[in-house]
Length: 201
Image (cartoon, rainbow, N blue to C red; front, side):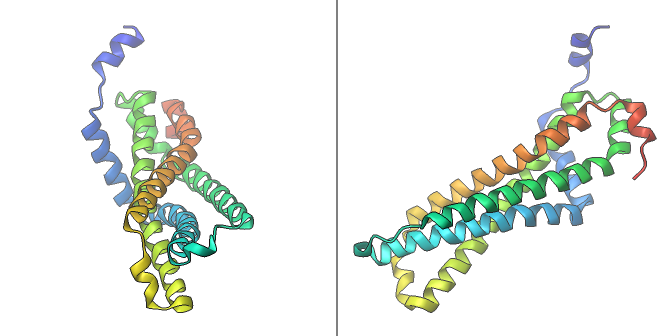
């Protein structure tokens, strides 16, 4: 039986893969919280700077206030640190699941099934982290501006821009999460069942 025939016989519906991924997040909730926090903190910092800039531009339109160059460097550094933390957390998560991956492969899971599960899990973590980070960043930015300029800034918040940044930061957090997961996920997918079952955390 060739690989193409096996692939036709062994299928993992996307709904089932999604269910398995959600269950894995719940089972490893402590690990999931660390990864969500890593994403959320980076996104919160970026959101804080962006929202501060947006509200300042709306409140002080004549001043032409913009994000300074050093703030862009801070954004780049925060994204880099977030990626490093995510890769580290994902690698550890893969090591912890070697036996589980070996068992799944013995039961007929193919390489792309394992990869799919990790990618869906990363997508969900990125989604949660992005939304939480945006909320935290928006709250801290708004609170900081209220303390500096008073409650008048609330009337100057551009709602459309806020929704735009919510979408952009969520997409960015998903890209960061999935991108940081691809290498460890590929490594996990290529494991031989015997090697995976022999591994102990």
